[in-house]
Length: 186
Image 1: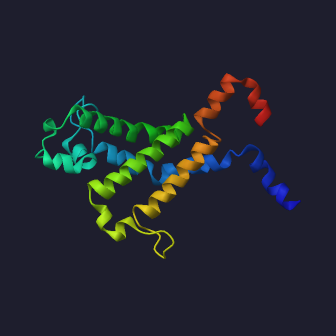
Image 2 (image 1 turned 180 degrees about the vertical axis):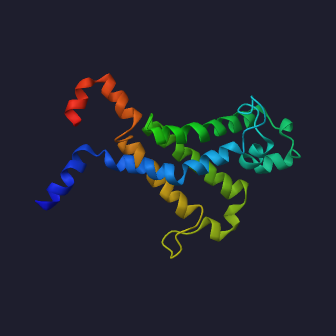
Image 3 (image 1 turned 90 degrees about the horizontal axis):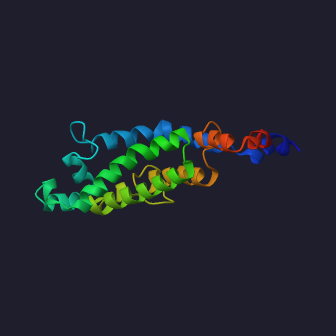
């Protein structure tokens, strides 16, 4: 009886958990991703399509080194991946915080983090450093790859499954598209 009284509203609407996930993302990871994106933007008004050389060093470390740290020696593929990655690092976190196309943005962020992790492990050589990679089910919860990014993926999974929740643009758009839904979910 007490359980139903306390938890049935949350079970029925399930709007709070996604909202809290979006707030936690904004409080802990939004700045991280945007700061990283800013290091990739080149100079001038075309900076979003002319990446800084550091962007290539972050995303393609071995290829950039092999090219003598000259981005012009890399191909169109490298440029496209760097530009797309920079845009993704700006737009996907913004979409999550706003709750705009939340499920799609969460899946996109999960994919981004997988690629980021593989780049860290193999491109930057973190695979050789056990303390950076970490291990699950040990007594140390702060390894940069396995431990921290597992929590990130949990946030993305919640948002991919539950959507944006309360105070999301998705919810507002749904109400505009179907005014009857406002009375059914209230």
